[in-house]
Image (cartoon, rainbow, N blue to C red; front, top):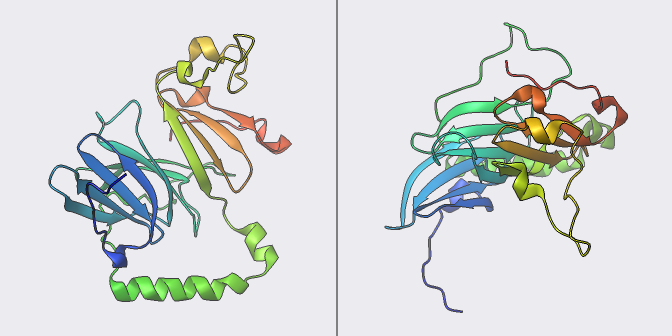
Length: 225
């Protein structure tokens, strides 16, 4: 029970809120929306860049990127993706997943692909002050805020969703009839502030579905754009 290794994460990058470890590297997410790549072999901070908001969860992409792509959820401060996928080698955005009430058009602003530099100490302190001032916002503003994903899990097959109970059977989650046979490798499940749990097929988008949520979510469509 002794500390074997200690990494000093720069304070100006924010308070650590999520981690994603691998064999030789570690990605850290913070409340300042910063993602940082550490080399565990030499204890070096290799790269830092910014996502769209405070980080809530990080997972390695289960089916693409050869172990170098990470799936990141963050608290949304404006309209935009609920989950972003980054290549940790250069910090570039390679994929984005979002929930929309309308179909995207050509007028929609393209997602940034170049890594955004982390905030300076001054910018971080200013951001903290703005958030403190916003705590007094009305309940109506809170209800109208864009919902964020608080947690996400990923996998490469339905086998990881199966558990055995005392009777020797049972499923961790209900799967609509026909989905099990047609499932493609690579899935993501998200849950967040809108109280909707969604299953995303990372290979064939149309196989996605809402596991549980409000009645209006029953007829939603999952598609690539």
